[in-house]
Amino acid sequence: MKFKIVSDSSADIRKMQGVEYASVPLHIIVGEKDFIDDENVDLKEMQKELHEYKGKTSTACPGPGDWLEAFGDADVIFCITLTSALSGAFASASMAGQMYEAEHPGKKVYMIDSLSTGPEMALVIEKIAELIQAGYDHEEIAQQIHTYRRHTHLYFSLASLDNFARNGRVNPILAKGVGALGIRIIGKASEQGTLEPMDKARGDKRAVKCILKHMEKAGYQGGKIRIAHNRNSQMAEDLAAALKEKYADASIIIYTTMALCSYYAEPESVLLGFESR
Ligand code: X90
Image (cartoon, rainbow, N blue to C red; front, side):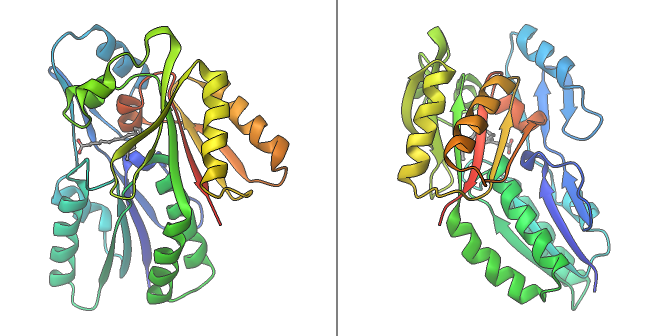
């Protein structure tokens, strides 16, 4: 039986080893230009355009046809999308899933609304891959993932909320003042899949301390950590070092955001996914 994991590009994963995987790109639209979030996207160019362009910019999720193409001919698909509270990705993927199952009797598409994005999605995807490789059957995998997701979280430090506010995805009042004088907004993906502010911090050093404090409050005890950053390897490394100091055995991987997360988590932002007990 052929298993496949399909996610959208907000998970910041282009390729995986040892399992079938496809990333379906979102689009970042800057005036006439359409930046497609796949391996060919020029992030430097996108950032430059975003900086220079004075008009309205936006993003667009994949359509059902894009998802169907990614499903290929797999027998069992685990399809995970970014939060349905902020994007139409889950709705369009669900539509594709229903079409796929109707066209191919016996095949199965498991739909997962991550209610999150970025490195929390990455943790769930890694777990699905582990379970596939361990040889579990698909119903067992779905069950285990359901449980696992109660123990994963997304925290972040954002250097700006402008693109969120301009696209009507957070209240503009919240966006005011973030970024000025190094003010970071520290927050998390809420249980409803929305952006939930928790704190403000001035400067990255304080932001690191603040994130640690909130992680421990949420029950962090040394589980896996994935850190994605947009042009802020310094803070990502400081965060990893602070965590390593207390949790020497924690598995931590740092990487850079792809196009979609780079658009919303604007330069100098850091996203962190972690497992709690
Ligand atoms: O056009 C679309 O359908 C895409 C809309 C995406 C909106 C959210 C993207 C978030 C990217 C930013 C920081 C984390 C916030 C998490 C809130 C759940 C990452």
